[in-house]
Structure formats: C-alpha cells, structure tokens
Amino acid sequence: MESERNLSKKEKSRMKIMHAAKGLFEKNGIDNVTFSQIAKEADVCRTTVFNHFAGIRELLLAIFTQEMEDLKEHVGSSGLAGTSLIFALFDRLIEDTANYPTLSMRLITNAIISREEDNPIAMIEDMVMANLTEDDLKERETMLIAITGSYYGLINHYHVNRLKFDGETMKAEFRRIMNGIMR
Image (cartoon, rainbow, N blue to C red; front, side, top):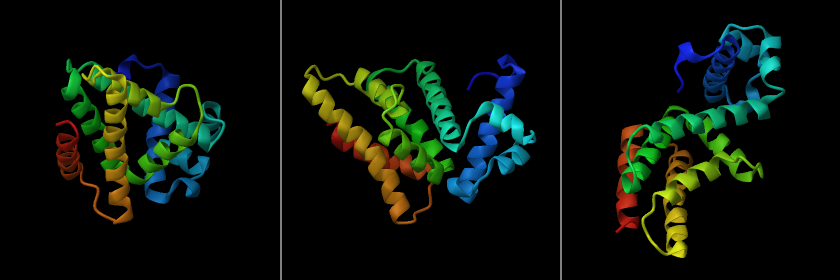
C-alpha cells in the first residue's frame, strides 16, 4: 500500500474508512453494517463516510479496487516473473482471504457478476495470463481457468466445510494443486 505519509488528508480519511469497514463487514456481515457504525469505528463523522462513498456497493468496490492495486504493487515490486510471480500473486490473495474470508468471498462474487469495465477480477486474470509461458493461446486460457478456478474452489471449499482460514495451510494446499496443474 502507498506510504501513509504520501497520502493527502482526504486520502488518509478514505483509507481509514475502508479499513474500518473491512473489519466490521467481516465481523458483522456486510448487510448488517451501517455507515454510522463505520464512521464510529473509523473515528470520523457519518457525513465524512458519505462524502467518500454514496453507498455500501460503492464502498465495497473501492475496497476491492484498493486491494487489487495493493496486489498489483506487491507483485510489481517483487521482481518476479512467470510461475514465480503467479505463485506470489496467489500467496498474497490467499493471505488476504484468510484475514477476511467472508468479505473476500463477497467482494469476489460482486466483481465476478458485475460487468464493470475496470473489473478487479479481470486484472488478476491479466496478470496470470501475462506470466504464463505457453505459446499456444488456447493452452494459456485453459491454464488461466484452471489456476483461477483452483483459488476460487479452495476458498469455496473452506467456506462450505467451515474450515479455519489459515493462510499458511491454504497456501500450501494451493501450491500442491498448482504443481499438479502446471506439470
């Protein structure tokens, strides 16, 4: 994430609101959180929240977009490429998912069903596709579907079976699946 000191007061306030919202959404469920609660948690007034976000849907999109920007910055600064970058990308996604499992699923679902031009899921797919080494486009598309599907399947499996979201365990499972896919 961009350094706190490089952010304007307005940007810091926006980030504070999004951070407070993430915690409340995970704890109480997205549908059970109000802007008043978010304002209290972020230590800002309710109108400040409304000045930044027109509603919950816009706030959710902003949170997911910020998460994707942070992810993009993380892998961009890693110096990695190819399979190593793909593993680093999903390691980071899995860590975020383990910290906020319910919110992550909701954000992913909203992004998948939205038809927005700047869809964050498309950004993930673009990063994966750009780092697959196969020459055949159809083979790369098949690999992309298998890789991203493995991530979605893994987090769905944890949700459905009420397993503890442990980042290290989930990363190890994902790597095992990926090694099978990328033979």
